[in-house]
Length: 187
Image 1 (tube, rainbow, N blue to C red):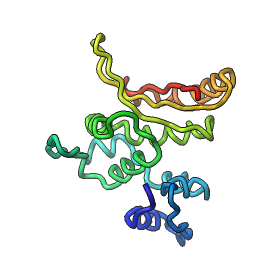
Image 2: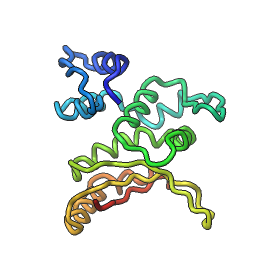
Image 3: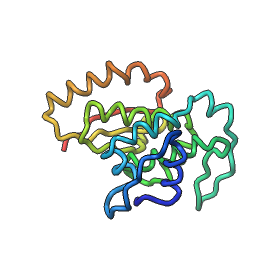
Image 4: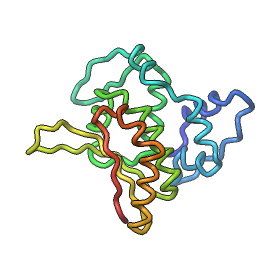
């Protein structure tokens, strides 16, 4: 996804001071890859994070049809987070199914954005995937999985995952309400 006019305007309107000069569109680079290179993405995201309570107070739902996915419509910040989520994670499986899952579980959207930046702290050069797991034999409901694809040696990757768990994930686990799992994947 290349930098769109909408994203440029969103980024420029987010900064309270003079916005940084945005790079020209570069084929093969997403909006957020370019911002990450310049160290601006964390600053941008920190200014639009909303709380779960804010989302729950303001949401109302629109109908869905087989041809499109509806999203919570009341909170522009929520919609911005959803767009960011689609840019920073790689989706495995059907994107519409993942978005529908997030629509039914909107509390996961800000948690996933927060998770991504905590993951980057411990796995800075790893790709991070989102997918839905469905266990047909089990009565357990569908779950969203964040898969960290790392090239670290297994021992180092396990140590990094343990540090990630201690610093952030174990404190945030309740917010996931049993709907999110974070795993390692070795490349």
